Amino acid sequence: MSKTVLSIRNLQKLYKNNRGVRDISLELKEGDIMGLLGSNGSGKTTAMKAVMGMCGIDAGEIRVFGRNIDTDFEAAMEEVGALIEAPALYENLSARKNLRLAMRYYPKYSKKEADAMIDEALELVNLAAYSNDKAGRFSLGMKQRLGLALAFVSKPKLVLLDEPTNGLDIEGVVHLRGVIREMSERGVTFLIAGHIASELEKICTNAAVINDGTMLACREMDYILENHPSLEDYFLSLTGAALR
Image (cartoon, rainbow, N blue to C red; front, side, top):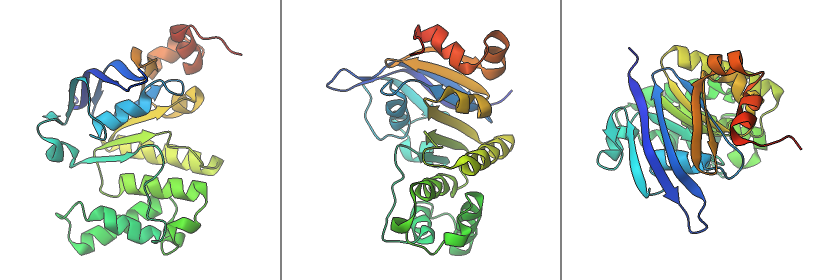
């Protein structure tokens, strides 16, 4: 039986404007590619920030690899990579130096090991040819690719991606799908937030629908597509929304 990598139980995080997360429960097994599908402002990014400890929560429990992030945060995050909202880049530094700074959070790796991991991450996102160029000179898509490299560089076993195809061209989107599938086959688990159903349908093994901060359903993609024409139709059947 696959082990549980991420467990979210009755998560609640509301802001002063009464938006955020009202009630979300999720469980991700090893190798899952879970899509978190919802409209803009539905609470997807807040849920991811809560998992990464980037915002406090009002209620609920989050466990990563069985560790409660409230009481064992550093150990829980040791094998987690993430790209949430816009990539956090040092624009005056090269792509390689941005990744070197990130690797300082993983002192267990020697310099030789870290350099090899940086090379691998740059190759993975097709940035090896631009490794010594400053991030500030990158296009939107190249910055997104560097953000993905930052999420992948430490060889995490759980990866959280918030709208990962933002700014990528068609070739970049197709390449990223392949990277995610290959990593999943090696046991890496993904939680991917998005609002474009057709894109999540192409890559995810499971999908959770979130609306107004509440999770409406979570199903395997095979089940969804056996019972609905598309993930988009499934989403609309749950939210009661209509195409305009």
